[in-house]
Image (cartoon, rainbow, N blue to C red; front, top):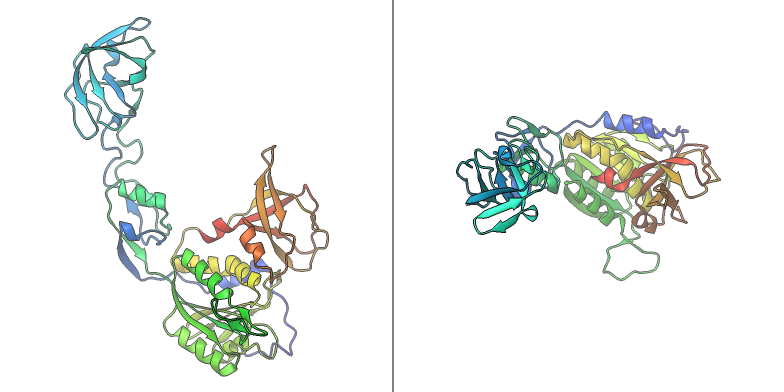
Length: 414
């Protein structure tokens, strides 16, 4: 579509699946990597597999506070009495448990040689140096075997994994302190609109506060991106073109909000066509039809709509998977789940709709999706209220009780 006069030529709307496939075909994983310490790895993307050099636990250890014993010493069906000859706290290594003896042991302490069962302290009676019990005992009970969690040479985290808090703990458990990660994706952002005012400033006649800047900033931060913020750009073709050129010089992706429709003050799409290549424009979805995608100076460019909900929706549906592919993630697509509609949608549209929904579980353990009452593209409250999108196909009506596809915001942005 590069070079077309899209205002005068009818442009067919591009279906969602086709648009996403086209978009991702232009995304290539970044090759640059860097090393980070464990405390800086949260939300970073692994550039190589992490393999354990040890067993975890390294030796069999006690799963609870109690007494390490020989199973062969147990008097089945009768009381067993043993002499306590040693005490083994976590971090110490005990002596061999001889026949007829027991070792006082604590959670996490290595099970001493000779012992093959641990009886919990609540099941014994202590009388000086003697312990007695008549509880049933099984060989190996209450013992965590060596390598029960992780075995030597096991890959515990795969290349393309986004570090979560639990992954940091897992990596720490094998003693790894440094990791090779992909460098952060650099995303340039700017916003068009002479009507925009920064929060904290007086709101004059005809002006609105710039919410899109903070929505996008938060979304990009949640995905671990480095942000180059060029701020608000005036509604002129010259200023828009200058901002695009500046943003594409040092970034992997440029995102704008507004200026991609067909109005006289919408300059982003026109600037994109003049400066580079426009590969996609006008999608068959709601909200978010006027999304422009192209390439300028070998840098990907996405012009998102100006309406607040459309910005959020198109980021979730298109920008998020694009960034994940740039990051080299193992998981790019968001898996939808079937839930039960707790609403009626009786006026289907010719476009595929992504409506804001909240999920709750009823008394029958069903997941129910309810909709925010106003699904307008300017109603930003709907995105804060909702948990995700219900995906409604073109020309499709929904009645309460129908099964519908649901996409979680958390899964999209994780």
